Length: 470
Ligand SMILES: *Cc1c(COP(=O)(O)O)cnc(C)c1O
Image (cartoon, rainbow, N blue to C red; front, side, top):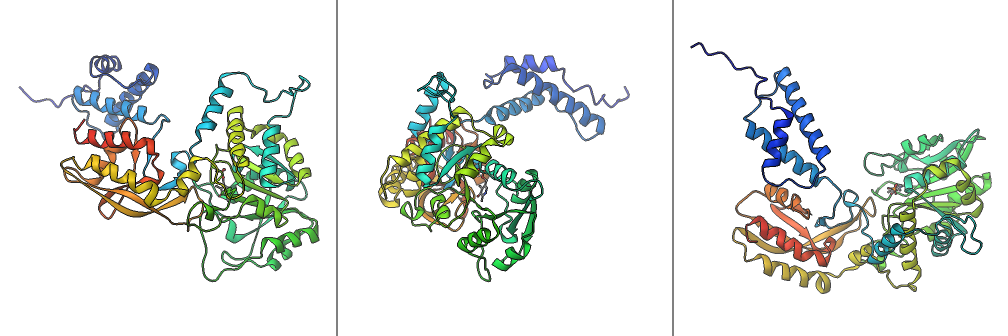
């Protein structure tokens, strides 16, 4: 018999056949059937394209099915669900930034479950101000004339620009040293331009003088903008005018001065941890700035939002912008912010709020972290093939805040003997409760500062399970 090379398309399975095989095999994760069907269809189609292009050789049917199974597992893992943050980065943007307090979560549950009075004036029974109470609370906390909220700080900035830099006066003067990228590849200049504002960059990256700003002022200038360098720092040969000087310049020319603060500290950061002082919205407004905007889910410790505070006439004007309607927060976010700000207001000077972020930042290595770490070590030393130790580390604020702040911390220092670090990290990420640590000095580390004490048990179980001890 002459050997004929087999038809390369013949091994591509039929969609139905794969679906039947999947159903007959081990239990699949609870991914909705339409997603599974779609995934199988797409995979089979990709196989056809790959074979057509000569770039793919299709394996046995069983291999194809297990490959698709892995894809379903991966799809299931990609749903948003709780995880353990062992990175030591407190505001981890890829892990949801600030965790919410129990009180906040309880408020979300009840407001979400029932009707509420979000836009109902209970005194009159008529339509009321959306989030009016929250705005009053925020203004009081920040010691501002007025405050309001938007989808996030980027949205807050766009709203401010829409209101203060438009039409003939759409030029916004900003220092080249402040044209920062705020994470995820989004840059302040791009955000500004979508608002229709025209950027007028002044100075050099490391040096900008008051004169640079002054020379750039034209009849078309709408405002002066300062962007807090929250996610990087510059050292050495640097110079810039103080906020007070900028405010004076603005006043002399009848121009509003705005500061995008980003990080959103509400209390002195140095009172939480041995870290530098981060400017607060209150301080910035006291320097005479007309408006300030901050994030709700960075150092503020609440849900994703942008907080705008400052002059009452400007805040009122921003709220009348048609765009405001498009960037407003929903009831759950407003409720979450309300609980967070109430927590701050319930505390006196120097008292720290009961918020997970504040608790994490202020946890003490010896009193809070070491006892937990030692208990974890005790549970894990029984595992054969895993070296277990403790190491003193540096945790970070993260989320593009306070890059220089180094918080002394403590981490589990693990070295599996039966597999590589990458494999170990992979297995931990893929558990029912994903665990995210980091590798350093040929060890896998889990920083206790960002792990909730109530997660210690499940963390232990995850590690035990990897070594077949459960
Ligand atoms: C983080 C940050 C932003 C963006 O805040 P979001 O709430 O993520 O939109 C804007 N400006 C500065 C200075 C920031 O640090």
